[in-house]
Length: 451
Ligand SMILES: [Zn+2]
Image 1: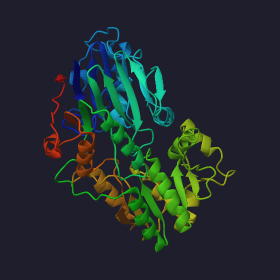
Image 2 (image 1 turned 120 degrees about the horizontal axis):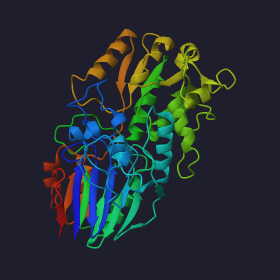
Image 3 (image 1 turned 135 degrees about the horizontal axis):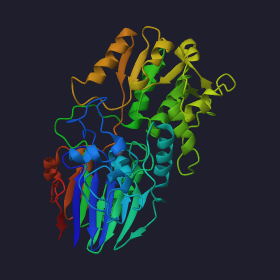
């Protein structure tokens, strides 16, 4: 009997923690943090006290109380006692916060399986992020084509297209048949072929269940939908007649978007200036033969920005700072200020203050190349707008989502034709009833048996 229990990703976008049990084999698929997990009890500087491991998280029920799952160090200051691991493995579909972050709480003796590229991203994230650490696990990497045997299950990862490289869906071969898990995916990105491959391989297995993401399954989402090519076309058109600074913000792990801006820079005779953090990730990924990433140290259309006046810079940043003045790919705010009309300058919300030194001339533009805020009264958005109006900068939106639309998701489901669909990573599981297959909506931490 195969049993599925969702401990996260239920009626919410993100935080997937999906347990699959087959006979004595127990495996988690993803172990992420929900985006809104702490919002009821913590706010801004009021944060759970990480020095006490899981103490504050368990107090408010933010993580499930499951024996044999958490690390002894994480339980030391809690009312739960540590017992040896009762789980065989954790598989991560990709290295986004809402799918991977809580691995840091799990027992270091439970092996963590993830894509090779995903593991490179993990290491880069730990290197460049303040207090980012996923724990001392046995990280085992896979690629498409790998088949990983865990007890009575065999897990087959298949690459999918998403807004981060190294993203996978899984075909889990159990004693009762195949369970397909989509992870996060899309079919409007540059590697839609990978998602299609996942769908056709899943279809061939005639799955007994399909655990399916539904981020954009909604009747009310009015946010604009562009493809990656659409982002490129829009920004290129915008810059073809624009003679001032173009500042852009995007998710730091969205490598497709970096390529897009590099291409736009090339086409419009500009240079694309990325932060040291982005440059550091690109440099790590350069070692991965299986993906092609721009090289900011060599690409004639790219530059790396270093902050000045930092008394204690991070190691990754210091590495670039040391080369300021001796390497013409490394620039500071003085350079950006002087050459602003020839640049696409990457910034993000937390780095907006650099604009004071960059001093964009009035009429410069800011392109937000990430999701629009969900709420109309978003505080962060209001602050951003104040900055832009203070600099008299114009605002533009150009983003391609990492997720398939409702129609695309339903069409994938119809192609795969599973016996039952289990919606996760969605706020609208009730809409899945229109997908044309039998649907079973999971309930938080409630196990249900397949067949
Ligand atoms: Zn994701």
